[in-house]
Length: 215
Ligand code: DX5
Ligand code: ZN
Image (tube, rainbow, N blue to C red; front, side, top):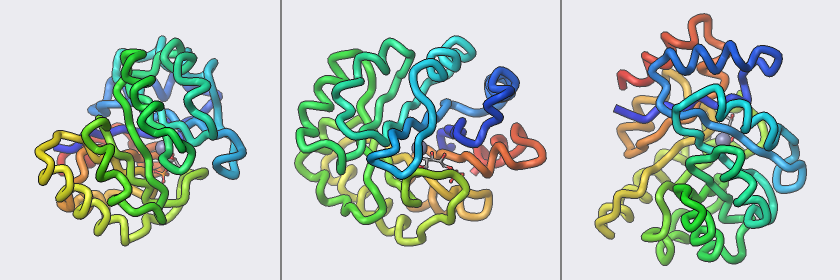
């Protein structure tokens, strides 16, 4: 069964408590929190105050996806805000090894995200230091975009690398996950499904989460 991580980017920000309550009562495993800086990606989302409030509203795992430049500057602040998993983009980290050590020394799980054009083989000499790889299946910055089909090949290739090295690294897929493509994504080797629009724009978000979970 996949881990389901609804993305609060598509939640109702005026009624966050209501959406947090819904997720708490649902089969959602994690809360996926998208932080954007308007520089690494062409959009700005939310930051510490929102994450602190969400942290107080749930005991589920807070999976924080940083789409920001120089994430190392803020790792400690995200830990304080309540992150359990902190994911940084490989494209924003010239000193990725140092970033991962920092995240782990702060007591968080360390994730690395790859944009659609970034090949998975770039991870070959760092995979053993990574708890989770997030493969972007859309260009980061916005919810509600179309899944890029080539992601399926990347999942297969990454799964192969993980098995070959005898590791237990999780594969998280983020962007354009729907009830129609989720089975193929899990079948290719994904462990974690992020879903924003598919969950929050559905008539019954909690039933949609249950349907994703059943895959
Ligand atoms: C996009 C974010 C995603 C986004 C996914 O840059 O990283 O987490 O919320 O939204 P959907 O599931 O609507 O594509
Ligand atoms: Zn995300």
